[in-house]
Amino acid sequence: MMAKLATLRNIAVADLAVAMMISIPAGVALSEDAPEDAPQGDPKKTIELKVSDVKYEDVGRYGQFTYTREFHDHGGAGAKIRHGQVCYSSGGCISAPLEYIVEADGVLVQEGQLLMPMAISQAFEFTYIGEDGNGDKIIVKARILVVGDQLELQELE
Image 1: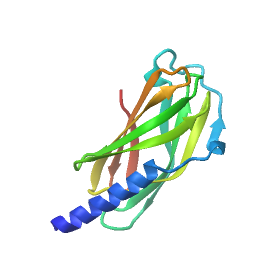
Image 2: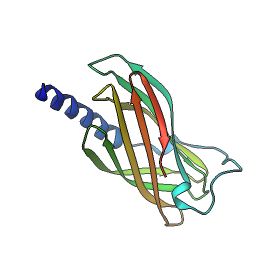
Image 3: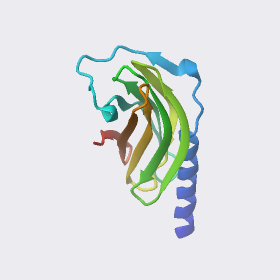
């Protein structure tokens, strides 16, 4: 049983690491108007993480999810995200250097992201670190909660 869990964990870690290290072509950043109520002045809040196009596939013991990850710039300066880490509630974290570029007032769209839960209910905590176009440090944190075939994004402070 422990060997099977270790194998599942290794598969999930490998898939998450690949998802975090995907190279995104410059043409993927799409321009979008920032909302009037966009956060101003707090570099931690200038980049917002959203998920869309969530699909559940009943494979393996707990299934898997594919989704689109979106980084939205509300600060007007854009951002470079240089490091990402994901920690999962079943224990452990993985991290990787990144080269994500979010254009000023734009959206970086990353399709085909993959989550493979290792339990019927599991939380994945994502942390992205970089700098905005002004050189100020930014930190984007979010939690994805998976329960059965449902996935929910929760923004973290």
